[in-house]
Length: 377
Image (cartoon, rainbow, N blue to C red):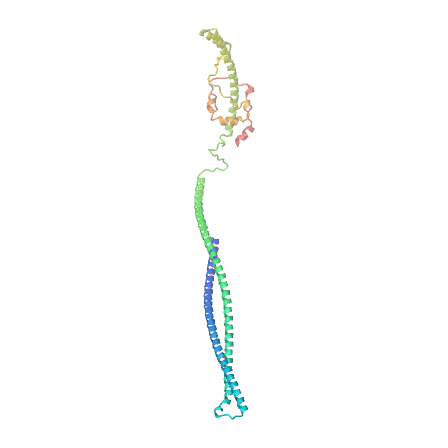
């Protein structure tokens, strides 16, 4: 916002400066027009004056010519009269009454000549004055021309400055428009942020209210139900699970030994049946043989296991690449059907058949506290 205010103030200053320059340009233009009008008037006056001077000179020339002609004529007459006077004096003839006025003609001629000379001098003085006035007018016209040239250059410079000012004003107007657009965007962002702030305050208030209503969870762990790595058992449950695992391992080992032994017994029984079929014994003899076999071998009292053999245990010696506990937790819920015939800690069911107690060499070692530490993480 301060930038917009500064830009507007700068724009106002430039606008006032531009207005002053425009006013000054108009005044100078009026002054130039006035000077040009005066120049034209002076030029017209000079032309008129020159024309008058030319007319005066022509009149002077004509009058001078007339006067010169008159002077020449008078001089000629004067010479003639002088010659005639000399001739008369040489002849000694008395002057006639009709010529008594001739001696006065030289004085008249001298007066006329003096008068004409005075007029010529007056005309020369007037001509000199007119020439001086013409020189003054010419110098004034030259000064006015120089002043007009100077004012023209000043007007040209002011017009250039006015154009630059107009360009700056346009740029400032564009910047003002950009600032106004940015200001509107900022206002919209501020409004959006205020709305978000109101929503956040409302959510915070709701959260605070919900926290005040919810129980205190200080020094208590909270787990995500969708997290696959969340802890699912307590220490006692893990101990019980590990104990069951060790017991099941020993039971599985015993079952494997029992299966191997029964496989060997089954192979012997198959060979016996083959021999009986080859000798075409009767069913009674077979039953008698079976009874004899059951009497001689107490182990054969138990019938061989029917159905598919169980899978190999995940913690077999050749499958020690991964921890058995991890495999047990991974397959505890996915492969329960494969060991459904085994007893579980929850139901404590008895198996469908019994087997000898596991030998001490197959019993797993007791679970130590170091095995339980990684499970509490």
